[in-house]
Structure formats: structure tokens, C-alpha cells
Image 1: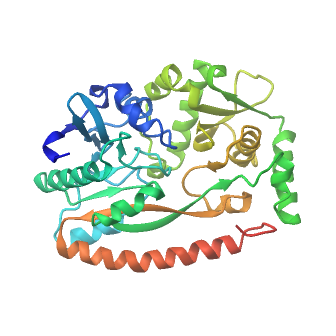
Image 2 (image 1 turned 120 degrees about the vertical axis):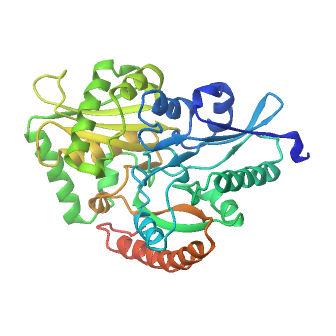
Image 3 (image 1 turned 90 degrees about the vertical axis):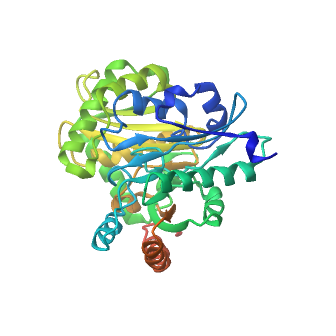
Length: 388
């Protein structure tokens, strides 16, 4: 089919795209973070807007009245909330007299979880539509004088396509738990050496000795009050860690999640004498056989509560519910001692200034080799009986 059969539309509000049309493309993906409800809630709650530095600029492809291709995209005026740290690139651009911002970013905002890709309707000419989408992005960036386009935390199966269209790959890593056909939490513990197995048991025991009970609550079981309490914990944690916290989410975001997205939510609550007043909570999202840790917080400093609420209890729930992959969120080398091996993630970058682009392509080749060596070194040092 000729390119003239398709129409490109850029959209600044996901609400302008019918939910059924968008989800027909993105619901089959493994990631939950490109679904209409999640992305639209970020926008309508005031969390992801031009004012917060994330201007929604979604690319859509139409054939007649049918949406047949789409990519969630954002024009960024900074690099916060991406968790792929290109600040040194921005500094280099400044020294070269090149404007680095604004730039175009493809990801689920403030969500460092693997799975980003273009979505194309089954039965359509995927190669032609993909080429049209990449060409449209190049034209958009050139017309609006954007320094580059960046796809972050991409679906590994989509990675090679992007490289074929002139994008440079950057390897980073996070820490991801994978099921080893565990039947119980004790099976998971059995994978550690004796010393670390004792440490994990001691950490969980210390939480119980503090008088806390950890409970997992999902879907329809979650009350509106718990979403409100989770916002308070989230906001407090972000405030404690300053700009690293990237506090974008508003109270309205959590309220709307209860209304429209609680079927994907998993809360771990830590309660004492009053079961209605959690002293700590963690917030996860689940889809299929995947579990994703998002946020956590506590009103008291309780030894090892973070480890139990964010790692051990979610792993226990994951084993009971057939979860194969648990990504607990960005950062934290302490994760590796708790059964989360270093796992490569990929971002793809295209720069429109020729000299600047060449410098960074050369830099990425060297960086990727060092990153792969680091991943191997980390995983050789895990306290496991058998290294992953």
C-alpha cells in the first residue's frame, strides 16, 4: 500500500484518541505502562504536562478512520524523571554551543520499566508503517529544532529495528528478579548461600519483632483511602531524596488510579495495632506474568521494613501468583544481595547535529563494552549458589 494511504497526526492530549483504538494496539504488549488509562491518568491528573517539562506529543498513524500505528512521545525541556542519565551529554552540547533541549523522548513518563516500542495493528504492513513513523519523527524534530530523539527502556525485540533506522544503542542496567520455578518463598531462599539466607531471615524477623504485619492487597480489595495514604508516603519519600525523587505525581493521579486502574495495582501495607493506619506501604503494578515496583514510603524508620515491603513480600506474592519477572524499580545496588541480578536495559538515541552525533556514537561504543563487563562482574559477585 502506498504511503499516501496513511495519515499522520500529532496529538497533545491522549484523551483526544479513543481509548478502545489506542488499547487495541497497546493492550497486547507485555508492559502495562503504555496502556491508555495509565498514560491518560498521568496527563489528566496534572502529573505529566508541558508545565512539568513533559509535553505530550503522541505520534499516530491512521488509515481512514482506523488507528493503525501509534507511539507515545514527549517533548522534554530537561532530563528529570527519565532514569537514563544524559546530563553529561547536555553539558557537552553546551560547551560545543549546541542547544540540547528541547528533545523528543519516547517512554512511559517517570517509569523506568522495559517495554517501550511503536505499536502497529495486526495485519497491516508493519515495515512500511514503521518507516513512515521514523520519517515523521525526523521531520518533526528538524522542523521544531529538537536536538534528538530518544527511546528509553525499549522492548529488546524492537531494539534492532530502531538501530536499523540510524539510532545508537546505549546499554545500562537495573536489577530484575526472575522466577526459577519456585513453589514457595523457601525455594527462593534456597538459592542463596547460607550466610545470605540467614541475613534475609533475620531482616524479615526484625520487621515482625517491631510489631508489624505485612499484607498484600490487590484490585477490588483496595479502598480509596489506601490510594490517598500511598500518595502521602510517595510524597514524603520524594521529599526526603530531593530531585532524585522526581515528585511528579499529584494526589489526583492516585485518586484516578483507584477509579480506573486498580485492577493492575498491588499494595503491600505494613500495619501495627491499627490495621487501618499503615506505617509503611509499597506500590506495585502487575500485568500478565510481570510485576513492577513503583513507589514506597513509611512514617517511621523501621529496620529492614523497606526490604520486606518492597522485595520479600512482593516476591512471596509473585511466587504465589505465577509471576515470572519482578522489576522492583530503578537504582539500588542493595537489590543484588536479595536475588535481583544486574540485567541490561537499552535506550536508543538519534542526534541531529552531525559532529555532536559522531562524538556520542563513538562514546557509546566504548560505554557499552564497559557496561557489559560491569554486568558480568556484578553477577559473579551475587550471594547465590549458582550465578545467573
